Length: 137
Image (cartoon, rainbow, N blue to C red; front, side, top):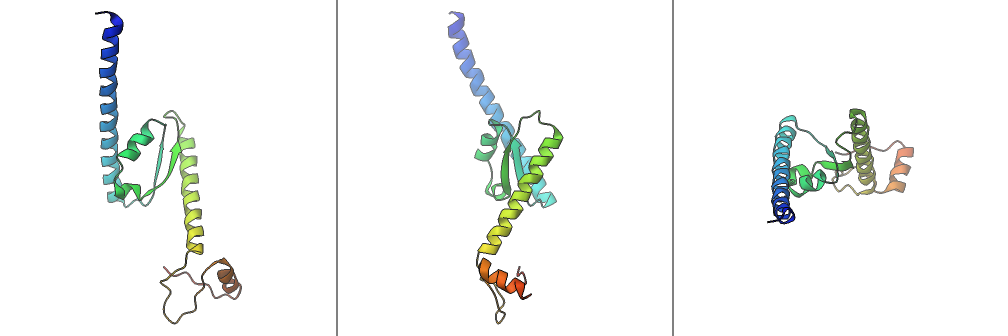
């Protein structure tokens, strides 16, 4: 056999081995993440990684963890800690702003009975000017 034939077969086998290794590693990472999120009662998850690892993680993500993911940030593995922190905080800030915006736009059907309520930006702004705004949770 020539080297190219042997190399082609060996390369394909090596590639399958590496793909299995990456999938196994992603599964282990998500199992640990699940335990930590549950134990520490973590509300938000921001995934940071490169174009290879993020799809592997997303494919194996449980519904519990998927509900907590607020953003995916593309970062190189050699990114400095400060860059990781800045991008993570920016993602959390964006998520909070989006939730506040949706909260202001969505009608709240859980208003206490017999209490005046407002739905929509114009109505809320008018009531805010009159000092009649209260947030229901």
